[in-house]
Amino acid sequence: MSWLALTSSSRPANPAPHPNPNPGQVVVSSFCAPDVAEADRPWSRNGPMSDEAFKEECRGWDVNAVVFAPSNWPAYSPMMRDDFTLFDSYEYSPAPAPLPVPVRAFYAAADKRVKQQHVEQWRRFTSASFSLEEIEGNHLFFYDVPHRAAYMNRVLAGLPAGFGT
Image 1 (tube, one colour):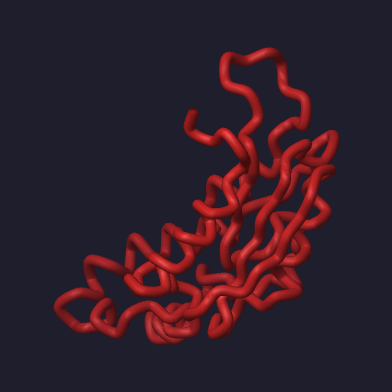
Image 2 (cartoon, helix red, strand yellow; image 1 turned 180 degrees about the vertical axis):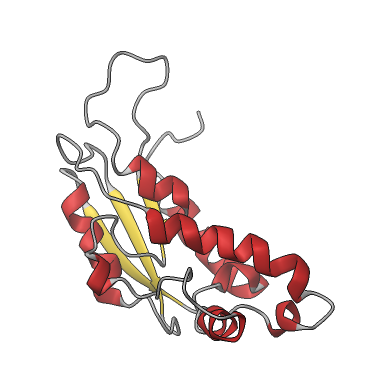
């Protein structure tokens, strides 16, 4: 799941005429629905965290240990703090209607933070079909080549008829 998915879920269901129509489907992976209450978010606010506490928060998301090496952490820490701050500061604004396109949602079997029930909440964001699928790997499965390949094959196999033509 990305910041794009969070922000696109707030997109009007029937936007003004635009040369690009609605997508054929929305695919979300390993992230809770955008309207999750702050108390139910599977992460802690990073702002008040010490550096060591922030490292532990990152480890909870399966960030690769190489990031925490003394020679690497000074470069990664500010970027990661900024990334976490985006999620910490996000405030959901309801869309006027659910998205009129199918939503396919994936959750990772070994994700320590985002569980099936978090991802299933995306069901509320579509007036079309919804599917929920388990994928192998942890939260950062996309960085594991075999897990990424299996996921991408499933995504591609589930694209709407005529996609790309």
